[in-house]
Image (tube, rainbow over the protein chains, first blue to last red):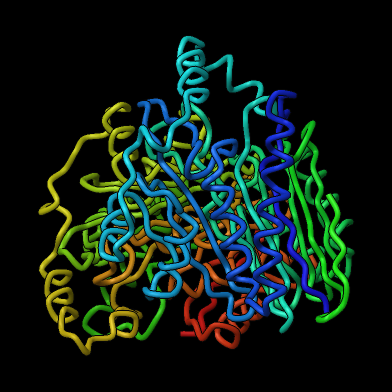
Length: 302
Length: 279
């Protein structure tokens, strides 16, 4: 029985100056998640650990390092899903917390709901004792400068170049020793988005989906396009039809490109330990770690 | 045979005293949407009109007549989707407007986004000139009564709500063969503040694709989300199943996999349609 974790740090035209930090970031996150799996931990715990690490890493647009909306605020979205029960937790447009993926997990574990938004999500966070983090602590100098720069452009011009926008949403998928799969995705959204804009990340079937019968998926890329084709669920449906994880991903991303002219990326793991990292953007930061036997040797690849 | 519109106003065991009003409400809404279609209007115009009628009708859990969250407030969700382009618009947890489906359509038509939530949705509503309405104007005696009952610690809001206070929705195919869906709701009785159910989540509360068909769902929101019910039914139709068979398979799966009950209205590009429920 394999244990696998695959992690992504965003599908977009990652500029050279961020490339090394992005690769280092996904590798560390994959190792973090993998150590959970190696210790017999669940796929859910592993994806949460990996995504938390990337939320804490300012190079990615999630938690710390998140991008700003058109009001200069940070609004965060996240999802986590358990392939065994199809239980799911998500938060959208939550503010001033460091780890939205953990809040999403709490929604799943501690409430009878799947998704909480806005101030309701924040009130829940407070009731769970989650620490409030000032916006300034979440925003990097780099992001503030980029935000200032883009504010001077007319909105219409920016919208045409969706492939060039930063889409460094983060995510992870994993398969654990007991055969359970899970996924998690977390993001600060698109720079200069309208207040309250919700993209694909926290929407079940779009930003992520996990089902022990077919596999777990986490997506990144142009959020509105991913939503239109419910990308994660589409990939899973191809796997259900017998396609390999790789073919399922490619077909789905290709469809998204042709039908709605959107680019992005996905990571997938199947219950048998097959995995794929696929993208139609210029670049995607990703890493994977796999263990073929419970007590056997480890192999890792990037 | 085109055009066609199918409308729902909630699934479950509708008590006798409510059923007459529910029936006349959905008929009225269907007629309103259908007369637009007959006049050559688009399926999007038709489904939005049908849903607006039901939002305005206090007997449904949408717009006026919405259920209350645990704090006694109204927070509404809505979704529209255009099967030709796959464009969609949604709002979640929006307050103080009469017609969330209209705002969802504006998100689709006037922004480059697909979903706006909470205060952001309200801000956008103001920006596009949608009038703010008092919360009181949206709250009915019935909604308040059910809220009070469900404050009791042993209450079961999910069970309590089935059939009595339904999410509304519509699917349609117009004369040109374009397909659309729309869904609107006040959500779950006594839900936590900020709780978002299936309704505004594309693939769960609804989905529309000219190549396959459209679905609008109602029922236990969290269960619908876990199986992405609307998208699931359309996957079955893509595999060659009829609207009825696909809908039944989807609902049966939701019941067996996650114990959820609900209903759907479904339409295919040829105008074949179904209204199925397992509640």
